[in-house]
Image (cartoon, rainbow, N blue to C red; front, top):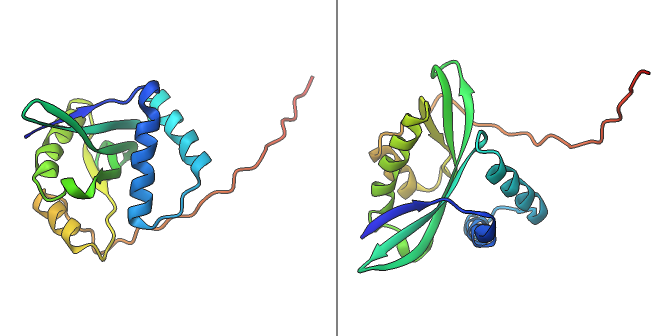
Length: 164
């Protein structure tokens, strides 16, 4: 089985959003559909923010859409520059534990390295022992002394005071 990354385009964004919805359902995460759609359009129109790909499997000449991965970019003094964050990595349940992730992550790492990315991070549910074990086998190191924390920032209209 060959695994490929395929960049989405504007005509395939609905397929990508459907996969994102499957991930949110699987992880039992709350989703604000309009917010997700706006963020996806922003990501696809601003490659400096990150990249999204469909994950395709080719078995005996038949190509199948099996999931997606989204990498966002940031900057870290600790790591010496640009870093990537696996924001989403989703495989449809029937495609898990078939070696897809093992084939895919080195491809992504090579791509990111060519684009100046110094480190790759991810979040994994602490109770998901299978995923944690997989990522550790791929060279990801748990940062046990760290606790990732998030605060949503309320978006407000800012009035402009323009001097004449």
